[in-house]
Structures are given as C-alpha cells and as structure tokens.
Image (cartoon, rainbow over all chains, first blue to last red; front, side, top):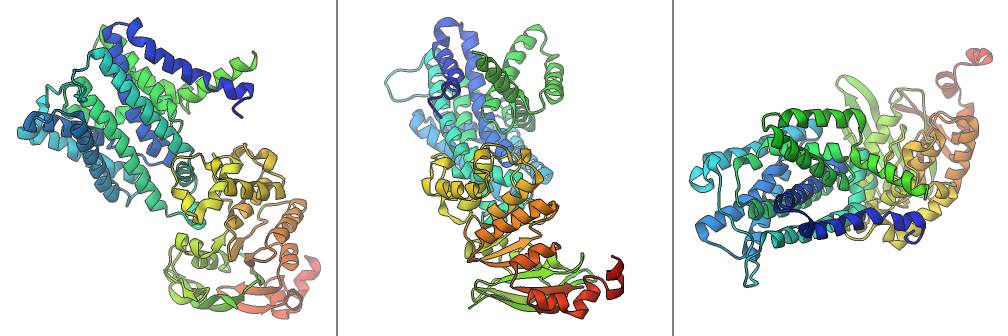
Length: 320
Length: 252
C-alpha cells in the first residue's frame, strides 16, 4: 500500500533522519559529528547482531570479537605490511571476519539458547585473549595505533567531514541490505526458527543451515562495522573486542527493541548520547547510568524503544 | 500402490515399551484413522513416522525408500507432512507469513534473500487460495497470537498441507475444539485432502467416521483391530477396551 496515507507517512521518519544525517556536518561541530559517526558504526554492528539475536533467537555473545577481528586485520596490515589502499584492507578485513564467523558458527551451533550464549562467550574471550597476549603483533593492551582514514585511491586523503560521509554511505548501503534480508523469504525463515524450530523442521527447513548462514551474514556486517571503526578511531584496543563490548551491543538491541532492526540504531544512539553527556560530568558514574538505563528499558519499554516510538508516530499521524 | 510401509516398529523409552512391533501399510489415496485411548502410543508413532524420534527397532519405508533414520526435514522434502496436536505455529508472525513459510518449506525459495517474501507471486497466490478457503484472508495481517483457538487449529491444518504433501499425518486435528468448530474443521479437511493420503489420530468419533475409510485401533502399543469404521464400531474387543464395556456403556 505505498500510496495510501499511512503508506506514505511510513517513509517520512526515515527520510527526515537521512536528510538530517546528510546535513549534520554543516550544522554541528566536529565533536558532535564524531559522536554521530560512532553511533552509526555501532548502530550497524548492533543491527547486524539483531539479525541473529532478535530475528533468529541466537544470543551470540562474540559479536564484538568478529568486529574486532576485522578491525585488527586492518590495523595489522597497515602497521606491519604498510598496506594503504582501502580496496585491499576492506576485503582482507571482511574475509577474516567471515572466516571467523564460519569457524565460530560451526563450533557454537551445536548448542542453542543459553548454551549457545556461553560457547560464543568463550570464543569471544579467545579473541580478546589473543589481542592481549600476542602483543608483538597486536600491541597488547596498548592496542594498534595510527590507523589512518581510508585511502580510497582518489588521490586525496579524507577530511573528517568526508570520513563521516564515507561512514554514512556504507551504513546506508549495509542497512538497506539488512532490511531487504529480513523481509525476504530467508529472513522470514529465520523468524520462523525463532518462533518454532520443530515446525520449521516438519515443514522441510534445514534449520542448522539457516542458522549458520544467518550467523555468517551477521558476521560479515560486523566486519564492515569493524573496518569502519578501525579507520575512524585510528586505534584498535582489546577492549573493543571483549565481552563488555559484546554485551554493550546486546544492551543497545534490548534498549532499542530486539527484532526490529531500526531499534538497534536507536539503542546505539541512546547509549552513546547518554555516555557523551554523563562522561562530561563524571566518567566513573557512566556504568551506573548505563545500568539504570537498561533497567528502565526492561521495566517501562519491555519490547524496546522502537515499538514505543512506532506507536507514538502512528497515533500522531492518525489525528492528522 | 503402497505409500507408507511400517515394518515391526518398536519404541522403548528406557524400560517402558510404548510401541510393540507395529506393522501396517497405507495405500495411495487412503484415509486411515488411528484411534486408541490416551497413552496408547499414537503420538509416539507419529513422532517416529515424521522423524522426530528414531524408533528402537523396525523399519519405515516411504514411497519405496527407507526413511527409518531420516531427519524430519528430509522426510518433508520427500512429501511427508504432519500437523501437531498442540498447535505449533509462529505466534509473532502474521497469518500470511505463516502460510508463506509453509509453502516455501521445500522450495529453493527459502534461501532467497533480496526480494520481499510477498514478491514471490506463485506462492502468494497459493497462500491466498488457502486462506480464502478457511476465510482467514481478511485476517492475513493479524499476528497468529491474536487468533482464537479454533482459527489456530485451522492454521495448523493449512500449514501442514501447504506444501502439497503425498502423505499427511494429522495429529488430533480437532483437539480442544467445540462441537460446532469441530464440524467446520471436518468439512474443511474433507475439502482440502481430497486426493492426499492421510493418517490421522483423533478422539473425536465424528471426525474419525466422517474422514476415515479404514480405522486402526492402537492399545498399549499394539494394533489390536483394524477395519472399516462400521466394523470397528461393532468389534466387541474394541468396544470393551476403547469405548468401555457393554455394562459400563449403559450408564456412561
């Protein structure tokens, strides 16, 4: 129903948001643009996790590690092999992210629910441990510094505003693909698996293969986010790959609304904006606020913020 | 033509024998009811036939192929479908999506990732046809969780036969329905399974006698009688163990 009133109105919020994101660098200062970039990168990471977390019902706890593998691959290639071209770094980072997902998925998919979570947790800590212990390669807990903005082979290096647009473009393309996937026959099959695995098997679905594919696709986009993060922040540290980071991404989904895709972006927005302002007051207090924010979301918006906003929007537009 | 051949299938859970070397055959186009008191082993037999539980002994052949140890999804792609006694739908998905998922279950379409699920015209048309039959087309965008129990039972049947199976196993299709709802469900099943081989279990005698050409009686893991519905109704052994003895029957 694209031409009915509600059909058209449905497209208003995303268009307004995209216009806002395009106009942002000419309105706001660099600090805010840097915050927006971070929101987009983690938003993409959270959206990619939502594909398996919210849509398939697989509680993966190693998502930041796959993100980290891609980022570290970029960092290592830059530092030790002096690779500069983005067109070499990105495929390398993505390949490593996909390879890691292929292996992790194969190991972890023997289990489901909480056991799946525990296995992915252990696998994630394996990556975290490697980033600390292989310090000749990874720089240990100091991390890998000095990763430049991507060299796109255009003959000039990106300014910070251009970097923001670069992130925005990749984000929009990735989000569009994820959006198409969740609406496709495959995406709906994933939701079917979440709802009733036995029925799916009785209908003829190879549930394991569906789960595995979803895990790897999700890992691919985590890799995309990891590469953007490495270039954007210029620094890969073990903290960005550990369980705390994986947990933070999960909290973003729960706060924003799991199984809604856009909720993951909203979660990223809420958490980073809160962190930005609370850290301005006191860095130590941030975890308390994060915890309170999580509890509030679970108590007052059990299905997350996105369904609440959606309802509000529908109510407002109905009265027009 | 024999579609399903069950050869001395037995099932033990620990020391408990639920099925004792059961053997029977289903011919193409036959509609057979499996009746028996609670705990007779009906659902266990269904789980063995649909692949959810491997049998302890015996063999199952489907369309001439041995399927004793095949997974449920592999059996489904051969054309064996089942319904569940306790509705096993996708509660948080729409009515239309539920049917589309069932239709694409054994098609390569299930792996397509870019176009919306509703963009596959053939499947969409099939889904519409099925939903119009049960008068649920107008509710296609409602979540399954919002449907009543009767409508959910209808969806349960629709999902099980959406892929046009060669053999359909219906496990208590009318479970939990009122008499009126049950009558409508019987009509619906009759219309839908005209040329499908069906094996069904039921407590509802109306359902058994309207739908089945042949009835098998399962009692503590054994088939103790089989025949036409009339023969079974008049079988003294069946009357005694299943319908209650003559004396009890008078006061029941």
